Image 1 (cartoon, protein in one colour):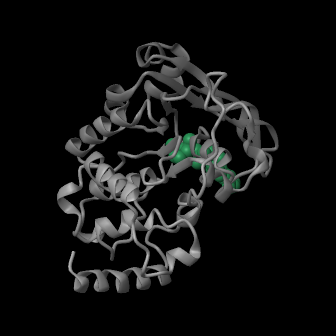
Image 2 (cartoon, rainbow, N blue to C red; image 1 turned 60 degrees about the vertical axis):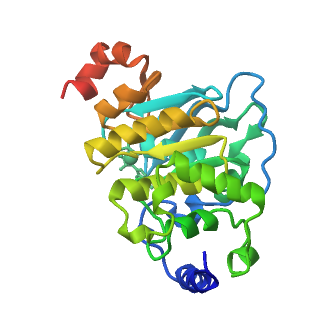
Length: 291
Ligand SMILES: Nc1ncnc2c1ncn2[C@@H]1O[C@H](COP(=O)(O)OP(=O)(O)OP(=O)(O)O)[C@@H](O)[C@H]1O
Ligand SMILES: [Mg+2]
């Protein structure tokens, strides 16, 4: 990149940081979604779980949105969560990420970190990345600049135009660009990407932090069929190194990626198993799939 281009980029970056971000209306907002990882401690997964919820409940004005929910996610697992509108899927993510405090229950990251003792940005810094439904990339920055921005862990650095990637960070950025299929679009403005590409870029921004656990809420909503297929491939390539919890209504997508599927209904687990098992479950057919 020429010095000229870099200077233009720095100016746009500065301007973007001073602007409100597109899509900020969604729960949690941009800062919540991107609490930066500065240091990542080791998560103890020796008991075979990266995430553990037991008997979690939360009420809103007396309405139990989450009702005795228990969930167990293994390291490297790709878990699909399905269920009707209002089942509590997004609220479950709000609880894991510290946006909503449950009234009761246990939420652990690995076997030693009690997530209920931490706030949203601390939880993000521990290595739990969250993707909201709407893409919230910086439209007026390039793909490269968006990914670079995701590395800036503290405010002082974030506002410095002199931030330079070290070689490990450059390698990671190159790797992430390949992973999200945007290696040919590094200098394109994020605002000019397709909806699907914006979603991938936002996932890329999360990957820059190398999260242990990724929570993805309706990631293929609004994507074309082709983008949906590529997103399925992307998620399959991410599991093992990361654990993923994916909420989706698109069953063709679930079919492509699913191992174990959990069906939520009225704030608790209605069924769990392979997709075929839950699809043949009478209760699941009645409340969700059979509609
Ligand atoms: N902050 C809140 N205050 C009041 N009610 C809430 C709040 N958050 C969620 N709810 C209610 O809790 C229930 C569960 O909502 P949630 O958004 O978790 O469902 P969901 O499974 O994600 O649904 P969808 O598939 O439509 O996204 C709904 O009835 C919703 O209206
Ligand atoms: Mg939801």
